[in-house]
Amino acid sequence: MLDDINSVFSRVRTALRRRGRAAHEVDDLMQEAWLRLALYEKDAPVAEPEAFLMRVALNLSIDAHRRQLAHGEEVDVDEVVLVDPQPDAEATVLGKERLARLALCLARLTDRTREIFIAHRVDGLSFAEIARVEGISTKVVEKHVSRAALQVASWMHGW
Image 1 (cartoon, rainbow, N blue to C red):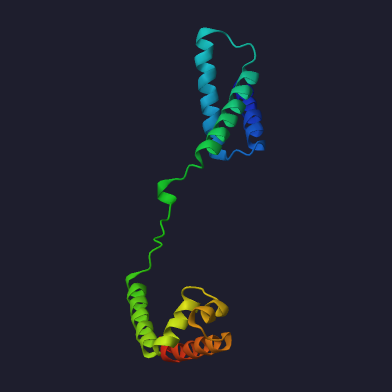
Image 2: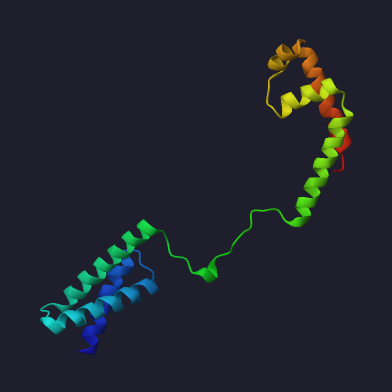
């Protein structure tokens, strides 16, 4: 009798494993199927217990898969590693220092060069758009932007 039960369990486990269930899931599904068989047998005899166990275990597996699709994968809280997307204090301080240094560099540019440089690099305006607004040629705009870029890069060197 015990060999019959073990062989039935083995066949049901194999069927569940073939359907992609992990070992711990198979054990849980088998336990739930066995419990349902025992509860069902209280009210009525089961003619084919192996078929009953197989069908219940497979249905439970399908239900678990649908639940997983609907609610996402369950994750053990102990296995979760939380990553703080915020920079650490040192990066924040260095960033503020670089920003202050950049503000000083921009302040050292002439007003017109600074305005043209910011219009291109920050506001995203094209050379032609800036030339139209400022009433100058695109070549002059290119020279202002390239001059400002070189000066800011040299002043920011090492930061």
